[in-house]
Length: 301
Image (cartoon, rainbow, N blue to C red; front, side):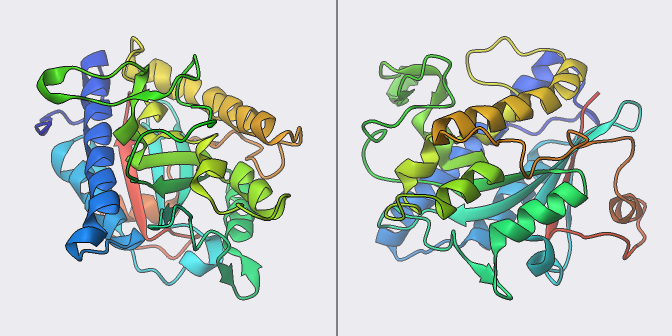
């Protein structure tokens, strides 16, 4: 198990590698829960998986702060949790996530969930664009067997199938940028997910294979297993452009060039944290703005 860091901010390459290791470890735990849990009579829901993963981030990485709010506002913005990456000395980048768990039959059954007559992803994209924040899905995955045939791996520069770790630290041949279980927590631009669910063919629009094509391990927000990780300040500076490129690449997969639709005009960059989050960090409360169920602050500088 990756041990907890005692640092108060993520300030070196080694700090980033430590964080990437924690995120991959939590993804592997999620993979096991989703793929094996049902056979043990344990059905982990999206909320319990989210709470466990984000609490473990708080417990094992000192520069990360996790705040839980009531769920009253989730129906209005379509979000389960938000990540804020940066520092008060530079800037903050906001990402808003809706979580969906893969079912035993290989589909995301609740992907088309409606709230007051509207698709959840419509609310997610609409409110995220208004708040200048990136909208993503976080898919909790786990399935028997290997990578699906015919599905490109967006998490690999060479589009190779993810490697499968073996005992004693070895691994099967495959992508060196991500292991299969790293996709236990996989993220995808909400704009691409919405386009696929609304598009043709209608058959398979909730299937794992359809959305895996443009999904990446959540750890790739900070770096992959092979890449020489940059300084934290460089990651914060380059992340808006990286997310823009991910959205464009997902649009290319879908064969739809209108990838800018639903993306934040300000690239998700803010000079300060939202008022409600500043208040919570200071030990007070504020009702200003929409809040997710859980907010995570990554102190990166």
